[in-house]
Image 1 (cartoon, helix red, strand yellow):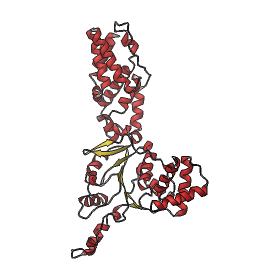
Image 2 (tube, rainbow, N blue to C red; image 1 turned 45 degrees about the vertical axis):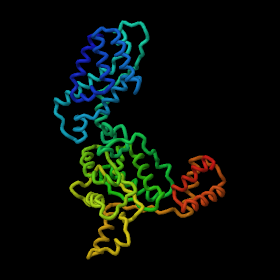
Image 3 (cartoon, rainbow, N blue to C red; image 1 turned 135 degrees about the vertical axis):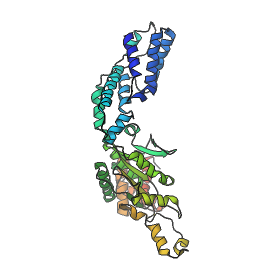
Image 4 (cartoon, rainbow, N blue to C red; image 1 turned 180 degrees about the vertical axis):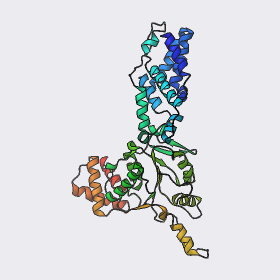
Length: 397
């Protein structure tokens, strides 16, 4: 076993495709442990064994599961080339299968076999093992790339920009479609457009505009959550980051997944550089979105640009051209969906459905009366007002 462990340690250093795995703390600590076994220093052996086990326990107690998950989510040149549909040379394919065999051998190392090499009668913790077929599992992952993605995109479904790079949102809004009530026609249009994006037919860039609190942003998040298992990812971009969209498109265009670039509460002031940037993207500039990307935006303003009376009076010779320019951005979206405040009947229907979901048990007449009073206090009816009302009733306020 000691010779086998030493040979396996050498094999790990020969990794090419999965070379990034050598920087993983669990793999690194395994190699330190293997070296310690060779040195025959009992104190060092025990310390290395426990350091390895400690790093493993921080994720799982099953070493095989850890290795399998690690390699399936590894972002390497092979998986990127496969995602782009590139032809893989035979020597690289041979290298892949050889390395998968090495990692499978690694995943089969048991705590009992390592403890047998350490001359120590005290307690040393165990780890678990499971039998996997790494060749089969990895080929399955490659086949399912359009749905699972690779690297960080296989672990998370929602992203945002940070320091110019795309980073995951580890605790995103878990809004579900079944938790939204009303606006069935509007939701149907959003779903149909999103399904076109997922199918690869190409979706329209979409603008949702209307009154605040009507569920525009919630619907987009819910739809993206619903289709995450189909390979859809949501990337939220703030208004002041719009200029970065061409770079985002460049980065994501070869990704096998589909992406919604989400811009919430979109509006501009006059002479805003982001206005021109977004307009150029929407009308099909060199950096226009590919078939795997669509822009979904929400706004409380139909024309997106905040106007003043001075803007309407204008100081240009051709004032009509100026106004047309500020009103033209919304027209660049292929699909525009209006969200209006619900009337009384729609509002009370939303209240009734939410009360059922939240387990609020009040006579309907009393429930509706209180809901209308709450709407008056909140300056009007909306799904948001209905949800806030039901949440207050749930806690007895």
